[in-house]
Amino acid sequence: MKDLDQNHNKTSMNRLGEPSIDSSLICEGALDVISQLHAAGFKAYIVGGGVRDLLLNLHPKDFDIATDATPENVRELFEHSRIIGRRFRIVHVYFEGGFTEVATFRAANTASVNTQGRIIADNTFGSIEEDAFRRDFTVNALFYDSEKDQILDLVEGLQDVDAKVLRVIGDPDLRFREDPVRMLRAVRLATKLNFEIEESAKDAIIRLGCLLSEVPSARLFDEMIKLFHGGFALQTYQGLRDFDLFRHMFPLTEQVLDQGANSFTNLVKIALENTDDRIRSGKSVTPAFLYAVFLWGPMCKLSKQLELDGLSPQVAHDASIKDTILSQLPYTSIPKRFSYSMRDIWNLQHRFYRRRGKLVYKLYEHDRFRAAYDFLCLRASAGEPVEELCEWWTVFQDVDDATRKKMIHAQQKKSNQSGSNTKSGRSKKKTYH
Image 1 (tube, rainbow, N blue to C red):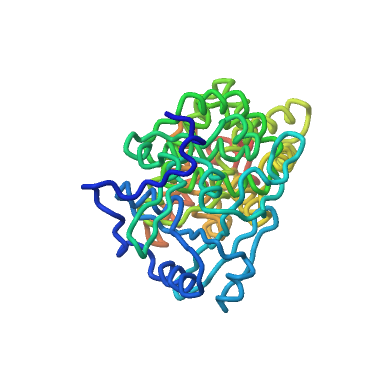
Image 2: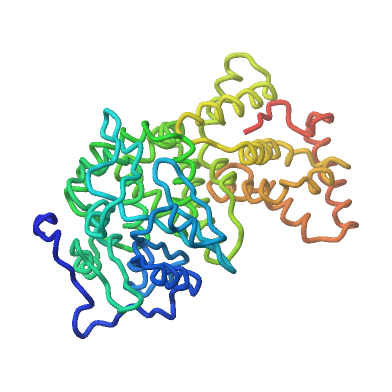
């Protein structure tokens, strides 16, 4: 490919014989925002992933807008809007059924950076040409002019869409140092679009993955959701491991995976497949569940070690949960509403063994029962020795109350005959993992 800077002043419109963007697929609210910006004398375009996905016959959910209007101009023009962000100020313009992000064209090479080259502020405005060259990948730097029904391509992005290549605009080393999250974005987009990452970018990702340690953990939590809740969780996970990026987000998990724990390796893969299936089926997903999966192996490993050090199973279990979550926080934050859910999912795993009287019904009525039950059955599918537990609780949910009482009675009788600990319902050597 030519040096992109040589094409800085060239503009490619829709090529002869190729279909233009079908504007009927663009959110009416976004088109209305563009119309109002035009009426006020500003330039405005649909930009980025929305244009890219429409060219690929996908159905984008979001349509971002780029304009020469400043954030203050946009805020004054739209009553239902607000300016957000400090590092990169944009405006959310709200309309019936949703909102669109409106960003002002950014100037070239004027962002404030730290000593490692990471952008810490980027609010100097410029032209559409400058803005195009500030974007991350060529396929994300396409501007759609809805009035003229034309695509403005300043970086040969149309060529890369056709070739299914994900190409960084500019020097990959420099661009990844500016914002290390671009490396995660490259893997996510390449997986989602079935694109090939260009070789120079591949090399840079492998060399610069350690820069993710400079990214705030709260931002990496947001990226974690994008990576694994986009419908391509398993393929994305495999891509992250191929590029040695996963360990920078989940180092504890990577350590256990590297030690060849087959059941845990299987659990991660099965859980990611399950997440993809739920998303395709329109079912809800929560970060708490995947965090519980990713950190299950490290938590169990620590719990076993604490037992060997002389702690009781219960104390070891409780301490390992606390320490595992705290150890993860420097890498990706875990909001408390999710860490509490993780704790419940993990704590309920050993309570599934307690199939006695009211304890069964109390567990069945727990708010996290369904998530914990799903987790239990994924563990069984992964090869952990909990298949009988999973089958018992599966049947329990499908029968009437009279049959449930018979099941509990039979289980109690079986436990007594096997010499189980009558107070806990566990064998004397039973641990919590």
